[in-house]
Amino acid sequence: MSPRILLLGGTTEALRLARRLGPESIYSLAGLGRVPDDLPCQVRVGGFGGAEGLAGFIREQGIELLLDLTHPYAAQISANAARACELSGIACWALRRPGWQAGEGDDWREVDNWAGLVEALKDFRRPLFTLGREPLEHLHEIPLHQHWTVRCLTAQQGVPRAEIIGARGPFELDEERALFARLGTDVLISKNSGSQSTEPKLQVARELGLPVLLLRRPSLPSVKREFVSFEALAEALSGIAVGM
Ligand code: NAP
Image (tube, rainbow, N blue to C red):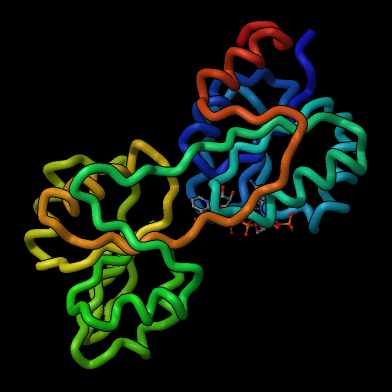
């Protein structure tokens, strides 16, 4: 018998794992992105109402194991997951994808928050933002000497000094080279997601000698078992779940 699993998703790895879960398990999404309709497991969408709400869901559904495969910057749901497991007495296993590491030729600068980012950006003219929708809230604050490009999941109308590109990874190296060249990018802004599917932009920045401003990773709670790779997590699961 396989345990009844609740998988918290929103990442490529989570979707990959959801494809291996049986019909007794549930894959949960916040509802910001695409919802797959071809999975062998159950799918639910939307928040639970904080840690208490999640603990209630775990009890009602008879969940035996919680898997946190959310994005490394989705700190709230990871905190809720850890707390809900404490409240309901089940184990939480998490994939804690390691961040990217700067190498030879990299000029990476870490910033703590939006204010730190604005300060670090002030000498640049053509920033390329690849950290989600946050810049869209600041389009009215673009300094006169700057033109922004914001790449996020969904496109929307730009403003005179900003282009907004809707795109979802994985991104190929040649596509990224072409994008930087077309835009005349002089600085890249990113989260340190550690994902292979979005890594090529860092290589392009390296090739062009461009600085990269990285938003610092949030701290995440310790949980019962933590895995640094999808393969390690899948192997541990195969030890307890039939058919995985
Ligand atoms: P967050 O700030 O940690 O979570 C905000 C709230 O969204 C949570 O408190 C929870 O609501 C709900 N939520 C988040 N993930 C959920 C899930 N898998 N299933 C059900 N409810 C969920 O998260 P976020 O940064 O907004 O990210 C939202 C989703 O997008 C996550 O699933 C994450 O994996 C994915 N994502 C995030 C990023 C990023 O950069 N932050 C990037 C790529 C993908 P309740 O408190 O009501 O339960």
